[in-house]
Length: 131
Image 1 (tube, rainbow, N blue to C red):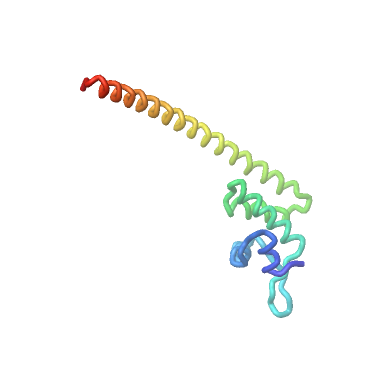
Image 2 (cartoon, rainbow, N blue to C red):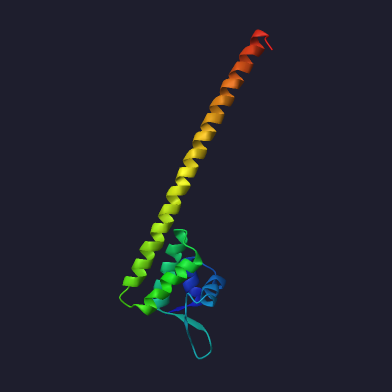
């Protein structure tokens, strides 16, 4: 069992972030008699999924859908299916972005080459007195 401070420290988060995930319904910690939040293995595992999803660029809505699927299907099958589907979409988006960046890279290389040639010609003309 973890307190909110312990769990936040474990994952390098703020306690405010954990409370925000709770507000979104992504985490549901138990409460002590005095109302303190207590996080168990389930919440720890859910937070690992949240952190992994964020690392890979999933939106909080997508992450929430994945996290909450385990409550509907304890086998984990639906959760994995949704994760694979969402990851596939992210991979397609990433491949499109890579194409865009490669095109931009080629544009920059061409501009630099053209400017370098122009600069070289200008310097040569300046040395020979041509204008």
